[in-house]
Image (cartoon, rainbow, N blue to C red):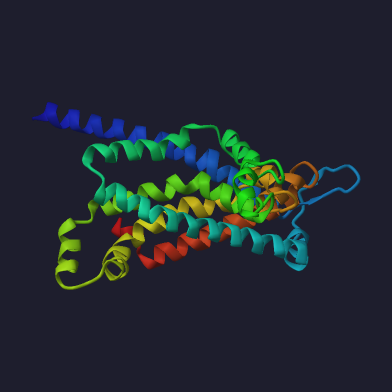
Length: 284
């Protein structure tokens, strides 16, 4: 008996040690770097030498909050992130519903594989593919839209929303599919037997149950869109988001770049706090 207890204690120590390694890595490598970045946002820079002066200063935040150009960038970034998330929900709902409730068991595996396949491709390859499609006057969309006397939207905010929606759509489909797959078919049958139409069942029965899954997917689509800058550079034209401002100032004015990067961090913390207060994730 003593030997068994000793072996159990040894196993608990080993598991604790295994858990401490990723925890230590998270605290030191990620949270430590994040804390250093936020501290840097309160520093200033020597305009002649470009050196960072480690002296507490709120000038960067004052410039960010008072300059209308930066406020517009923040609002545009929020608009793009929200638009991408809503579009992902609108596209993912019917796709996930077909996968979970209509497709056969064999087809489900194929559809899940097809949803995951784009994630294996290079980020840049996918965005440059959209660039060739959206190219004004010579893109693939212009070839298809020419008979209808329509033109490609070209590069800009609309192109960025399209590109980001395509990139992050799988992150919305999979949580919604998982939520629908757990939804009992008997619940849908009961709603139909009681005289409810398809739209009423979707709005009053299915959607409330899927809210935690949608929120889980939005954590990916919203946060990834909020911090993206490569897509904007490739298909955004003159359009700018917060990530581009950080990228442009990183080598020129590191403290100001850190100040701008604190904005999406603060937005995500606020979003996660609202999700936690709502208790939606506890139902996952």
